[in-house]
Image (cartoon, rainbow over all chains, first blue to last red; front, side, top):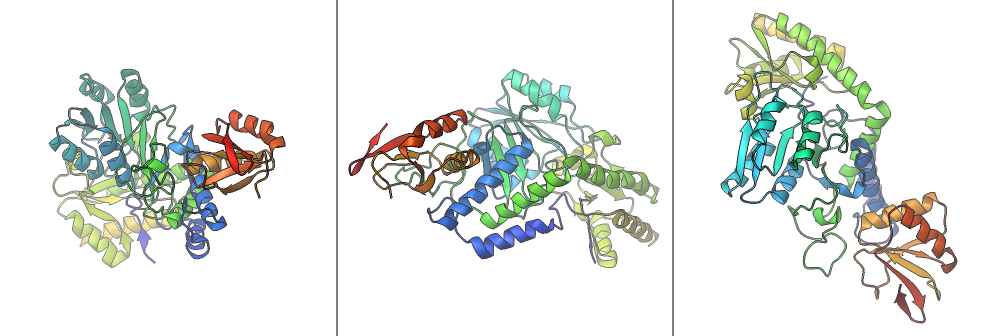
Length: 380
Length: 83
């Protein structure tokens, strides 16, 4: 059986309840949430409502109506950036961002938005003082990832959030790699907008994601169309969540997401983090013993998420990943991981790295098998 | 189904009407979630319907939960009077 170590791309496998919830919704519920008032349609609406409550609870959102469902974290980031930023605005970001942030910002830059990119150090960490210095001019928004999808480095959101709030700068956090792994409380961390994938740390099916939008923050929709209510209005209603959720909802996916969040809350984020970081710590200890292997990113485990990157001298990362898969059934990801600037920061551009990202269902044995396979591989 | 002096509470979103439903269910009061009557202009297809003797109690529960309806109607004759 294959060993899956690419949880930074999407978590796999899912908790059993996630499969069952998606299957049951698709097979037995059928109706479209928010459309119609027969019993099945109301049950579908309740399903979305309860999923929203679960997500709000997970992130400490005071009002569940401010949780907007999207198809992915990428869509959530696009919704936040295009919905908020206008020509003439100034946005500060970092070199550790994924293309889901970098590319929308490039489109906005070409429309007259000033984009300032603060470089990370070779550990992949962006020093808060440097971020603050970059925000000294009139800045509308700071957007940054909580955890890097390349090195796993965790940024100082807990410091930047309250500082930004005090300065009147909006904060958009890309929680693609941290949601479900680290505690995120939008209130105490002063996060205005939080973009979250449903299919990674929250264990939902792919095709799910969400954006939290702070109360009183009005953003433009990315999609307009039917919302199931206010049908005589020529535009979608201004209120959330409906105003930002045009089109038929992904009910089976969101049923799976609800089951995923329930699994996460029942298991405990601390328990999950402890397990995943234990595996990462073992990798950090053992991987450097392989001849020619170099770990990238920081050494401090206290700022480490559950992804890490390495290279082996004389070996193309793509070839390592290919051989791990073909000869050992170990699934990893090689290359630039849609984050070219992050590789520039940690010194691995343009060849990229091999990324290992264990998940909740990864085992000590999986790590042992990987280490043995790599030792075998470098021997040729 | 709707009798003289019965109340209809309508909300501006599906999310809010379901939040109201959840709150009222938790308080075990008697109400029904119904399709909004066609003659009431509404932003949402669902409404909360209840008897007049429960108006004070339900009003107080919704108010405490910050879920006051967008509009409140009472059945009078063949129509509805907006409160």
